[in-house]
Image 1 (cartoon, rainbow, N blue to C red):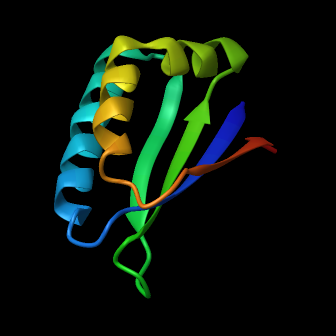
Image 2 (cartoon, rainbow, N blue to C red; image 1 turned 45 degrees about the vertical axis):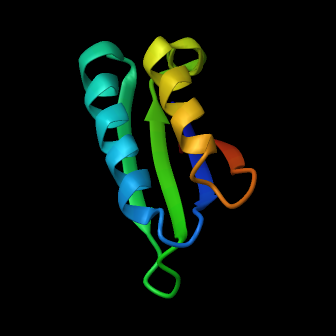
Image 3 (cartoon, one colour; image 1 turned 120 degrees about the horizontal axis):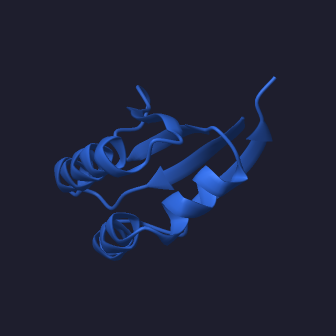
Length: 95
């Protein structure tokens, strides 16, 4: 399995819209990506603009399918207008 942790910071006042876009993306992932096991958004208790997304995929093919999907690309365009900077993405081997 492959794990991904995405670190994202949103612009002030954009948290609710950001969370809404992610909620829609999660629904599309559940419907269209059987190789995705977890896609979970969390918000920092100390900074309401600081988020992480925890992702878990069966294999590299599932991860690639996610990145190439129409729903991910569409959400990415919407999210880009809400972020305060570039996301930090880290990839892990699940152990």
